[in-house]
Length: 201
Ligand code: NI
Image (cartoon, rainbow, N blue to C red):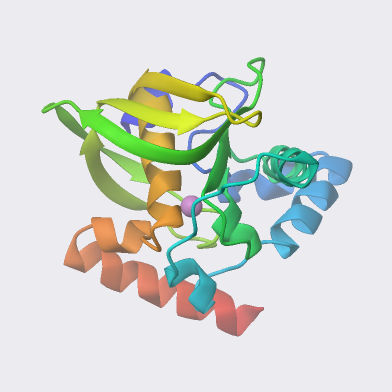
């Protein structure tokens, strides 16, 4: 899986991501924090995940505290990206961090301005779709125009995992899930896994 190769060693690559298989090996305190964070996220079946989020027009302290909260949940959940939609907040806000030592990046009102012709297929997971991993083909290089948390215009040029995570999170803001971006067979299998996970819960 391509993401694995580019992902730094400490953060597992299941993109938004989380690494479900290794849950039992986590330090108990880390595992408890992760479970508490995941419990705050909307999961498959919640109609909010299918709803298009609204553009943000107020760059105020409320927005900045929402972003800080998202960054904390993403870290606790051991994810590399999170969209406000996943908290049931329909604002066009996403956060990500693809390298453990890097600062969290927040993109507000992100617009995919350009994507390269080259694409790559890699496995993706999603914090809102427990136990699901599907292959998703996405452009390798993108350029995104957005606002930062002060409302300043920014342009991000990203490749590889960073480009993948940004596209995954913009999809959330449009009500699109990885299930919509994979093959029919993988979607069927994912739906089965989701049903099983929901029955076990
Ligand atoms: Ni996701």
